[in-house]
Structures are given as C-alpha cells and as structure tokens.
Image (cartoon, rainbow, N blue to C red; front, side, top):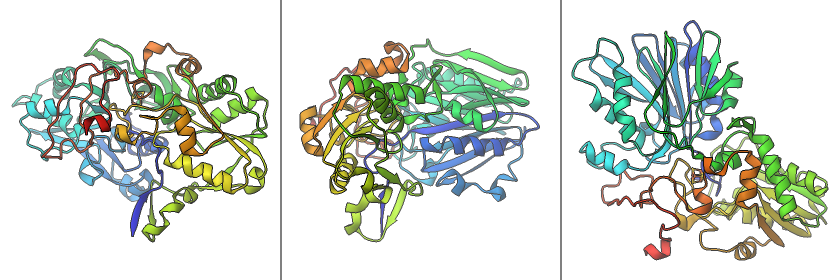
Length: 496
Ligand code: SF4
C-alpha cells in the first residue's frame, strides 16, 4: 500500500499553538476546541499539556485533533492552565517523538512548550550545547534543551525559573518562533522580534487565552485583546498579564499568512483576511482582465479572491469543482498505479457548469505546480473551451525558512521559469499573477511590516544553506550559515 499526500503540491502549513490560563474552567476542553479551530495549520500531530498547579500532564499523538483526543483522553486532564499544539514539521521528521508539546523536567519541576515557526540558527545552537547529530531531532526540542541548561541547580524561591530561563534563551534564538510555554503555575506567550508568525492574546471567562489566530478565540468564547508584540513575552498567572520585552521589534509578519495560511475568518494586523483576499481578487481583475463566461475558484483557498475577481470584472461567479471534504492530509491508495488520480480524490469537475465555457480560474498561489497542471487538464477534459488562470499573489520563487514547508528551491515552479514558460507548462490560454504592490495594498498594511522573501528573495533574517528539515537528524550533513541574503541563494543547478 502506498501512502500519498492528498494535499499534493500545495504548501504545507507550519503549526498552530494555543494556551489558556483560567482557574475554574475546563481548560483541556478549551484547548481541544482551540486546536480544532487551528487544525488547518498542522495535521501531522496534536497535543495538550495541562497543569493543576503541581503536576503537568501531556497527551500527544500523531493525527488530527479529533483522532488524538476523545472524552476518555480529555476527562482526566484537570487543571487551570494548558497549552496545545498542532504540528506540521518544518525542522524534524514527522514522528511521535517530534509531536508537541515538548516536555522537560528540571529538578522537582517541569515545563512544556509548543512552537510555531522555524529557527534559522539551529546548527549553531546545537553546537553550543555540544549535541551530537540525532540526540535532538527538532528545533523545538532544542529550545527546550536550552531552557533546561539555564535553570539553576536549585529552583528559585520566586517560582519564576522558566521566566528567567526564557529571558536568557530568547535573545539567542534566530528565525521564526511564536511559542506557548507553561510550568506548573505560569503560562507564557512569546513572539520573535520579527513576528513572522501571528500570536494573539484574548480574554475569556475567568482568564486569558493565547492563540495563533483570532479565529481560535471565537470558538472558546474569548474576545481579542491584542497581538503579542514582536520581541515580547507575556507572562500570565494569578496576578494577571505581565509584558517582558526581550528584543527590539522589527515587524515582518509573513505575507503568505494573508494569502493562504491563515483562516479567512482571522484578523491580521487588525484586518479581515477574508476581505483582504477578496480585494486581492478585485485588484487581479483590474490588473489582468480576461474575456470569459465564468469565474471559478480552485476550492477552497481560491474562493474569496475568485469572488472579488468576478465582482470587479462583472463576470458571473460559479463553481467548477466539487471538493471532497473528507480527504485528509494522507490517503491510503491501493496501488502506485493510481497516482494519476491524485487530484480526482479531492476535486471532481462539475461538467455541466464547465462544458463549452471560457473560464477564469482563480487560485491563491502556485508553489510546485503539479496540482495546478492536473486541475487544468481536468477542466479541459470536462469541456472548457478556454482556461485563463489567475493567481492572487506573485510567483512563489524562493523557499521559506521561517516555518512554512515549501520544499527546496528546485521544487518551486517559478524558481527558474518566467510567466510565459509557466503558462506553457500548465497548458493555459493565459496566466497572470497579482503583483506585489497590489497584494500588499489589499492587506491595508505597510509593506515594510511584511516578510516577502518567498516572492522577492529578500530574507529579513540570514538563512541557513541546508535544504532539509532533518538537519538535526542527519549526521552526515555539514551546515553553513550565510550572512544577510537578498536573492543570492544558489539554485539547485548552481549548487550542483
Ligand atoms: S518566506 Fe514567504 S512564507 Fe516564509 S515567512 Fe516569508 S512571506 Fe511567509
């Protein structure tokens, strides 16, 4: 039997984190709901840690939130503070060991952490600890190990051992990290100096909530208070919320959160992601119009932009595909031969809506391009007379090192191809991408507040030159860390 990735060539989301401090509330159940709302950010594993003030209990396993947790597993998780995590691996393989929260015990105490993002100085930090390859297998474990090293031989009388360890370790971390952490009595939320990944603070009955996205607050009846600021740690305990700054903020929120990663019902920089995606579609219609009978999305991430395109172009909006909502992240295929049917597992064309029509097909991005090519072939087979493909972001040319797994540069369709060549490869009648200025304008936020590296090659933080997420596990690999990079990562051909 072959296990294939039913998400095919799309980008893999990073991770989702969640935390609650709320005495008297069923915090494990709240964490379950929060993770359920963040499931789109990671489907490989799920985990929850809970403290009753004396003991931290961690339950984690491979699979979706609903596969890992049921009432039997949640009921014993009693306490007043919790953190939760859903994972897609960006450093470290997809195994139970790398599922989070990561737990470490120190003296008579312990702590747990959940990480969304990806460190870029993993090798240097690992060397600092004198770690041999394979001892630690993810950058999140590495953070846990660094914290253990900063605990003293004896626990402090103020009970703030984890907080003090964080103050020492956080300035040494480079790259992307939105963290939730807890010891027996305190909850912490941390965001790196650039704030690559979102993290918000909310208020709920009797307590506080931390979440990767505002949409997760809605499900637990919490209201948004504010973003955790880039370079800030918030400490939450019986005394309320304290803010501790560990780095100067230089905000570079991931622009791709607006394009694809975040839920449409989330707010980023105070703006609705759904409305921004519709504005991207409107701008695309003005920038690259096409004569067509119907505008249709590639479901589901292309829907808001397709709606915006149709409205601005005055062309009827319609559905061209039915999506099977029950195809999970992985799907067991009976044989290798059926790989050609990958896309059909997920999308089936609505022939009556397509036949004889000139179509504008809108998607949010093209990363590897293999799925897009198959989608266009399906539309042709179903009788489309013209296919004009429109993408509501610029060509995705550079790999992400800050928490999104898009593969190597050589995996990216636009890495070495111009738009005309891509159109030929995909088999479309015309192809256009939204340009960066229009994309940023649609977010209603300043350009300098974003990371745009996957579109421009302008990396805000020096990136490592390795091309594997198994960096800590690969004993044979030598890693070199480059200086500030702006469009100078060698292509695979150059490296060869
Ligand atoms: S490189 Fe792209 S996907 Fe990665 S953080 Fe920057 S904008 Fe986001």
